[in-house]
Figure 1 (cartoon, helix red, strand yellow):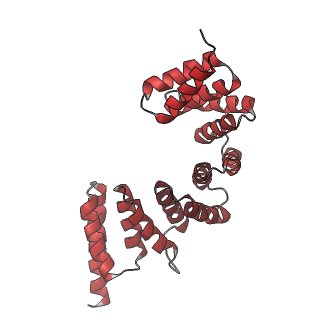
Figure 2 (spheres, helix red, strand yellow):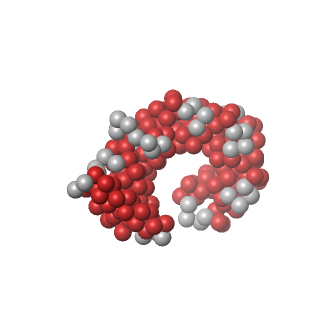
Figure 3 (cartoon, rainbow, N blue to C red):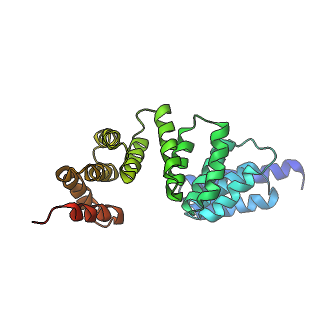
Length: 234
């Protein structure tokens, strides 16, 4: 097949896949992309879109494979920072935190002001049990973006969990909760901070609200259980 014809065929598959992707038809989009991949197995645009489509279907193991192939290409015109973050996100969803950390380490080394990478790093380290590392990640985010509500909330929660710097944890939790008033996660954190400070009345107020809105949340139920155990007997 002549190179011009080959390029036209690949472009046609890519255009068709994009239209199907925009319509939410990920299966047919993947079929077009797989056909294009047969014609050019190392085409960055094909690999990127295959990764995206599989991730949107929740197939993170397959998605991570495509993103990893992209990262390992010797040259690509696709934004490699975005690809590394997508790979890290897929690995996080697979609970492969060690490999996610590797990708985020490299991203942060090359782009130290990337708030999204620091945020994923904080979450990854928290899940690995490296709370000191997670605290550092969230503090870095707040240096870059003082009003980052997720970082405020996450840092407040970890500090409360460790029983450290509780006045700071309260300030951070209040800031997040007041900024996004309907966030159940932020309500829960604020209630949990109050619980750790021994303010059981406010703990009951916020944990109660959170529990009523998300009655099946295991984490919130654990916090309410801890609150009940802390209450003096009647």
